[in-house]
Every structure is written in structure tokens, then in C-alpha cells.
Image 1 (cartoon, one colour):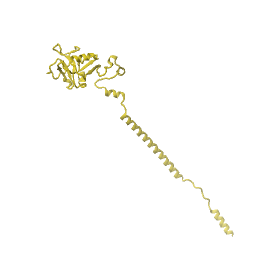
Image 2 (cartoon, one colour):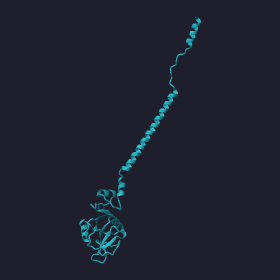
Image 3 (tube, one colour):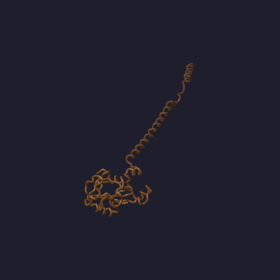
Image 4 (tube, one colour):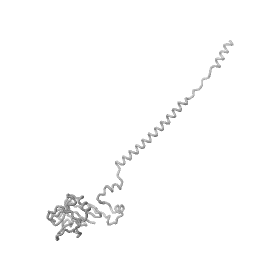
Length: 221
């Protein structure tokens, strides 16, 4: 009996109590590392998406937006032609008022002079009277720049302010000296000159009969 009790006591004393489960420290550390990596990757992807969105918006604005005012002015200004109001002209170029005055509807400005290329046809004298009614006179061409400009703007035959009515020499209506000449075919009889817009500018003048009905070019300051 004593032996059994001793054996029971030994058995009882030898039995250990169950230990509570402890979390695996290695597994927890690994999870935290993965979460940190995921957060970094997510942040990087977000930044990349944001940059791509900005690039797309910039490209969209460049393709569909309106160019700056300076670029518009440069692309629309050709051969010193200025179409502007008095206030805008003075603001941009700081010019005197007389150089910035508006030419009027249908007129073109070139080198501080206004030109009008008609669509209706009149005789040379009638054309001059019509130009005077508009506040000017038939065009006087005294340099190559004006000759090139008017030749490029019109493709018809236009009366200009050159004739030898009552004299043997060609004379401008303002008595300016005929220093430059752009005569082409001079075989036509006539006492009044035209500018043929469909001919090369360096030889586009022709003598015509003053009684013919043609378009005309007016000029005013």
C-alpha cells in the first residue's frame, strides 16, 4: 500500500503543468515587414499615377489650348501688316497716335500706310475719284517693299496712280519722281498704268487705255 502511494506521489509530482501558447515572434516580425513593403509600394504607385495624370493634363492643354498672345501676334503679323485698334497699337509699339490710327473696314495697313484693293471696276479717272471719296488717292509705289506687298495681296489687274496724261513722261499723281520701275509687257497702248497681280512682281506694270474698266488700289495715310 505504501509503495503504491509513493508511486502515485511520484507520478503526480512528475506531471508538468501545460504552458500557455506564446506567439511566434519570427512570424509577427515577418508580417510587419511585409506590411511595410506593401505600404512603400502603394505609395510609389500613387506617386507614379499622380505624375502620369499631370503629364496627361499638360499634353491635353498644349494640344487643345490657345497659344499665348505673343505667339498669336507673331503668327498673324505678315509683311509688317498691322490690324489693331488705336489703344492696342500704342500699347504694343509706343507709336504716335497718327501712326496707330485705324485704316477702316476693307483697308490694309502696311508701313504706316493704308491700302484698299477694290472688287468693283471703274475707269482710271473714276477710280481716282472713288479713292478720293474714301479719303485717299490711287496708290503710289515708290519702293520694292510696297510693290511686293501689293502684288502678293491682289491677283487681278489694278489701276495705280501712274500715268502720262498730258505729258510724254510717266508721272505719279503726287508728282513723286519715278525712281523705281517694274514694267513688264509695254506693247499695250495706253496712258495709264496698271499693276497685274497675276504677274511676277518685278515686271507687273503695264500701260493700259485709261477708259478701260478695271479694279483699282487706293492709298491713304
